[in-house]
Image (cartoon, rainbow, N blue to C red; front, top):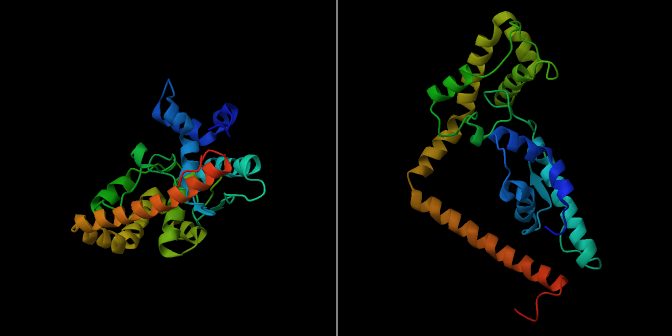
Length: 236
């Protein structure tokens, strides 16, 4: 935290958006410093590439600053932290059913545990716009473009071609196509989820192994950090 200014936290657009979405009048310290905690999640294992959505880029930029500042201040001769880069997918920003950023906390997401009927219900209520003719125009019609991109991800058909094919079919046909495409695309993943959900002991064991492995990395990194800051005091 000593490597970050309050002004930098104030400027973080993602934090501002989350505060607004939560309707908070007073911001607690955990919400305010969340980007720093996220930086710790990345740097403890010396992550050099981080898969993120476009909305998370400000968080990652803060992580990059912290990595550089720590090395400049405490380890200029032998840097400890790599400066991580972002790994963006073909769909780096997904809108939820309400037209805002898709998020579990906003209750506007499509979950893997949903049934095909529940998925259809969410898509049916998804926000579009009053214009009946379907066109692919991300700038002026972001909600419609989002649904077209989701179909494209599932079917590999270009969103422009999907829009041209649906045309005057309107939002109803668009949502029907998305429901069919998304349920088909998610079917094998949902089947795997159901399979593993039947063996909670296995899931717990996988999580435990992950925690143990992460702890090994964290302890190793923390030793390096303490030594660089002259805070190891000769301890193992």
